[in-house]
Image (tube, rainbow, N blue to C red; front, side, top):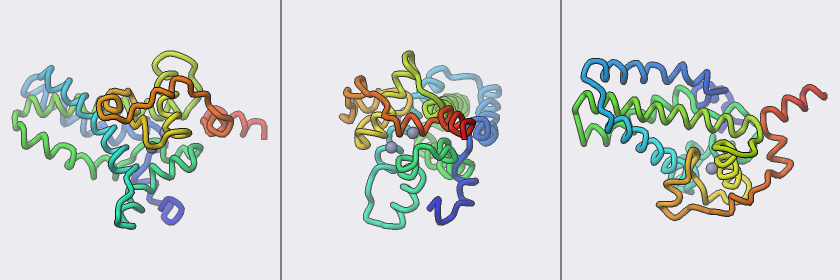
Length: 214
Ligand SMILES: [Zn+2]
Ligand SMILES: [Zn+2]
């Protein structure tokens, strides 16, 4: 789809988390208004962040990596993520865009509205959810930015790149291995992952150096 309709990239993807922030800010504004007006629910904040970690896993596993009977559905859902698997060096699709966020927000919040209508809890939950979501987008961008040896980014890069390079049906988490571990898709072999040259060359910093040398 990205090669058929390249202009759609502007709506469904962002170049970096800075551009994405522009689209997330209205949601933060709404959530902060709710919290300011009706009070902060600490539990709502934590549950919202936890809800995102599950969504991050669920969307990646059951939407992006599932083969549906409908060709159109496969075409639409697989276009950006499976394309990202095919070409890890195309930074246009590292982060979601305006269309993706505002299409998914009502779907994501609908089950919450069935459970509670308390505006304070809703505001806090949305704040936790969107905060964790933006953290995820920053992490995904940074993972494809440069190679990390140790620390949190080193661990999550090995986890995510093992999914990219060696096990596309394992390790769906992008910020932790929590849901992979709970739902049976955890592959511990990521601990021995060594980045191949092709993947290293797809990183933004490597590309910049390549461009400088050219
Ligand atoms: Zn990736
Ligand atoms: Zn994937």
